[in-house]
Image (tube, one colour):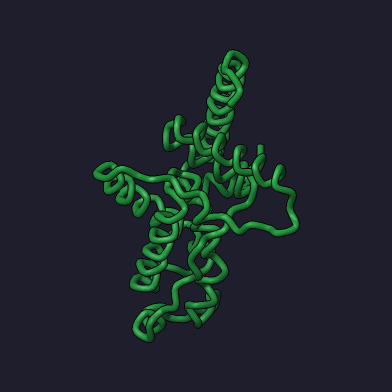
Length: 201
């Protein structure tokens, strides 16, 4: 499984001097918080995007994640940095989804795309269709399974890395990932069967 690449429309946030100070350097982390932001910004954005936020909302949520990280800099260090970002992103996404329920969302794929001028229009159209289908299928999955599928198939993390991020035993992560893949491919098969009897636009 794969997905055409998307990139955030927003640049990584420039942190204020106060935020920079709130991120104390340690032996295993960069002293400059901006370096940390630029290294992890796209990873956090893609995660938020694939667990259900629109490109524009993923932009805003990613900024929020790093503002939280800046204010709680003492907790973000070494091998725990991604786990902290992951947990924070899930909480920010949950808050964003609650807000989205109170307003009608207008899809805007263009906000998250960087169009390559040397690509053929048919190729771009096919990529967009694949992205829309992927998002539609992911949206039908339980959130806990969707997260694991995104981490494994889009972010290409190992089962051990996923277990570390989720805070579960390796065997639990492996069994949940097998279930997530099974659910996804069942949904994909159902969609393909539905398309057979659907008139072409």
